[in-house]
Image (tube, rainbow, N blue to C red; front, side, top):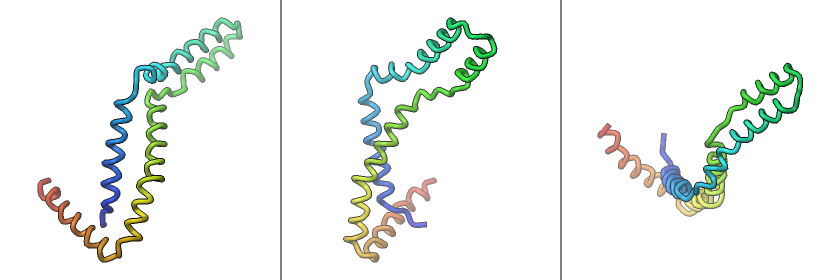
Length: 125
């Protein structure tokens, strides 16, 4: 299977941009990530104080307890959207230009050269 050099380049670019983006996060966003836990405690306290009957309280507590809280959810959503935007506005146009400008024999030669470079890595393993 031929490896597309643009995939490797795009992964490097995404990794670099993603790591810069992560390092730019501030403590306020980390504090906001903890809010769902505090909100759940507030809901449970309000529910217990509301005087509902025991069966309804148990059902609502079970629903609240079964919710899975993902501390990385906001980061994952932002990173996913960043990756989509990079793909849409940077990588796709470059890939289309690469395909349009370079004829098939040149693209094949570039692919072969990259495969030859990859042989070194496979031999070292």
